[in-house]
Length: 113
Length: 115
Image: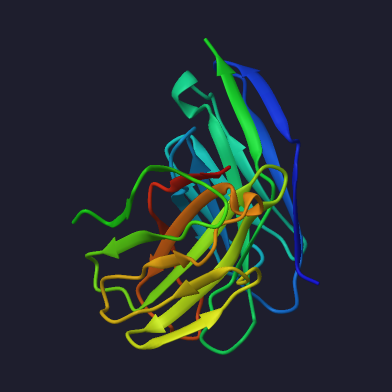
């Protein structure tokens, strides 16, 4: 069964304090791994797609990396506006044509000024 | 582009009532889907569509119907609401149904409470 586990569940940092969020996955045939950001009361907002082990993507203070078993979202010198829940999802081989995303529970990140 | 839009934003129903959650996208995306988000459960796929006139079931389809008469719209119908359907519902769309992974873009959500 395809599974995604994110850790930690919650993380509180001081502004400027860098850290990493983890996404571990088991999937039969990875087609892509996605990172989303979700603010309270809003829909998930797309951040990155990673397709193969060794791939890295960057956007402002965020950098996502991928291995065969896990992905990391590195946050460098975060600001209070980076506070959100970060969701990891994998797209697995499923029924032909279906793009089923399997989501983790998310990491709730709080950046204190 | 407005992207993916959903209405209503909030809804309260009584057990047994029916209603339709609306979803529309203006990006000419082939693929559309509905997810529900529950505390501690993550997002789960309810139904999906690979194009106008074609729909299929996801992980948790019971109690929900969908149809796709146009590329733009993908409504989700609750036939007879139950308290277990209290959740936040998200519609998502992506450009193609090609074999490679394609990014799904989400709407703002509908928060539904069934009493």
